[in-house]
Length: 120
Length: 111
Image (tube, rainbow over the protein chains, first blue to last red):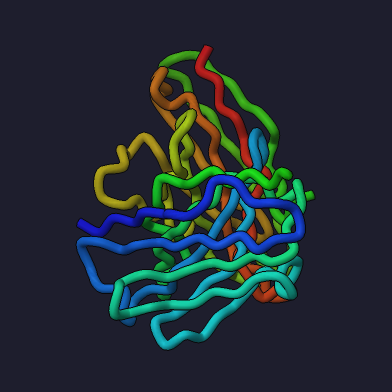
């Protein structure tokens, strides 16, 4: 069965760029049935969708973060990635990658999440 | 401030029925975009509970059901069990934001 796993630094300095990768196993990221999304959750707070990427490389970002977010996909490695620039303490959160069903626009498989702290 | 509004908390005794509401607007739920529900147990990633307003993924007990009407949706849980204690989130698509939106989450306490 398909599994997703986030990876990347757990600590990022303010004003720097947060970089995370999601590795998809048990299935191909190139399946046309899915988008691939990033979602985050600050401690004790709700979920925030950051954006999604399709296997072709087309993207759709949350307007509130659009100027700082970049997503990419590497089909040869079955991975997709997130970059968030100019981070502040407000970007401290658990970051999840998720499979995003195109026909329902729902997130049916999630990674376990990775905690990222922004601090000097 | 979340685009979709949920009550912060609900509670019920074992065996009882509870409902969680999710209120949106004409640019999301009211625009006929589907509503989905997620269950987040403490310390874990969210899990898809209901998709397409009222459909259960394989493995989700039929104690969980979803409905949608107008600009709102609801999640109902019957025969409450201690293991249902979790945070529940609704999610839809918003055309004015051109993206996915979540409710603020509802904490279910089983008394």
